[in-house]
Image (cartoon, rainbow, N blue to C red; front, top):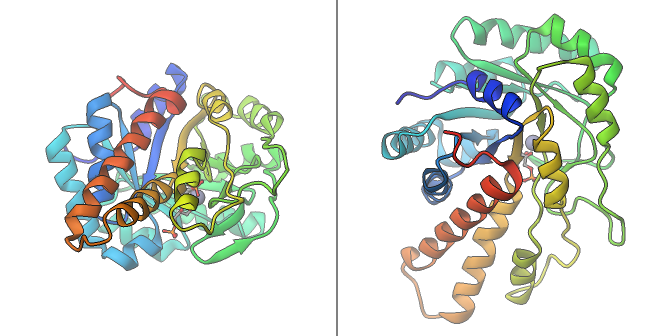
Length: 309
Ligand code: G3H
Ligand code: 13P
Ligand code: ZN
């Protein structure tokens, strides 16, 4: 099966009251852990690649890994550019075989964001590629850029943005954030569901995207801390909040930090218990297995897309 765009996936997800997981990939073990989980749960999947991942692994290696996953699983998989910074980056991924891209113009003024998004949409749609835009800005760290405060999406802007740009989906800011420290110590996790409802009412049938949606799984944080410390205040979005969002207009939920935690916790534990190991397969195999377990948990408990491939 060839790569699919997100169009049909999102139509089904919207109608079915579930969301598709968009998981960040950087190497073979991550691709395998995610896709093995999706295969066992018969779930549609978005594998997404950041600029940092392309720099780390090279476009062609990631492309070939995803092609292998398609062949191995037979699942509907979209390959998506995460946080495309400009037209050139999006063009390079479209020309290089991606089936979906995000143009992240959220840090630009509204008119400028619309202009660059529209340009990417025109180029992408001529080639059958879907486009995600963003309005509002998340707090947190992403690609070495740290944003201190949320700029919540202004619902009064969304209709004009979607109509004028022609985007296929829209990422909005309702209080999720990138990374493992999503709330201050002692702060109660909260999302602005009122903004999500207002946006959805203005865009009937239109797919909404949530970035920064890792739960920062407490058992994994505990394990990371037990075997080396360094993350005492890590906190994410509670799973029940994400489950609620997945039942609404939210059709795509981005998860990266939970995979990083799964891998790091497992590798740290492995070396604490087996300090003499030096064959990378001995620690990457359990790390891959840990990613698979986390992804299965997300597909079933958070996204509700198991059995929907
Ligand atoms: O939103 C950012 C993702 O977690 C990707 O992170 O840019 O470090 O690959 P990265
Ligand atoms: P997390 O840091 O919450 O996993 O978010 C990932 C993300 O939004 C990638 O675009
Ligand atoms: Zn993101």
